[in-house]
Length: 178
Image (cartoon, rainbow, N blue to C red; front, side, top):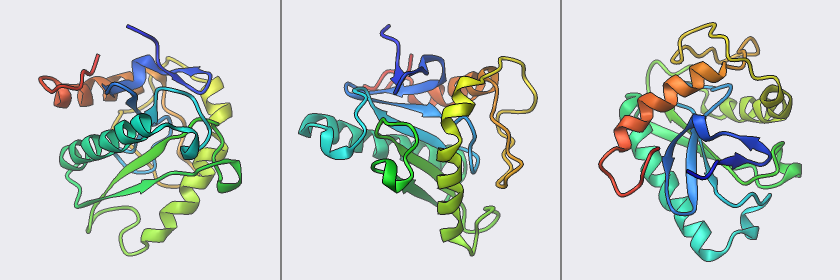
């Protein structure tokens, strides 16, 4: 299996979905339960850097992964966000979409939907340093998420557990989840 890189970070063990030209990983510091990233295989900083085949595969992956995480996490909708370039808040110079399952009731951002965007931007801004400091020691359940500044990066073990959990929902499809 070819290792997956999110910019310069090896993320193979955090992946749960692969298509021909894109893949999905669990998030290091999720904003809501089920917050995942969908990423093109080729590390380019901007959407406009992708060719038509890459862009089509990426959008199909966003749709397929979105349907699954919405169902698995009992959501009513998704927030899908892409910070396309550094000036837009992108800290890792590799195109990626955030997919966040959202609930009409019981969501940390219910009734204040737009408040999720500054949290995404703050999360992006600290991602580079968090990726460098990954620990493999567990400290809490992979489904526990705090939607405030006290959220701590998850361990590699926690992310692998969630990736294994999500991978099961893609078995038997044309997209492999190894």
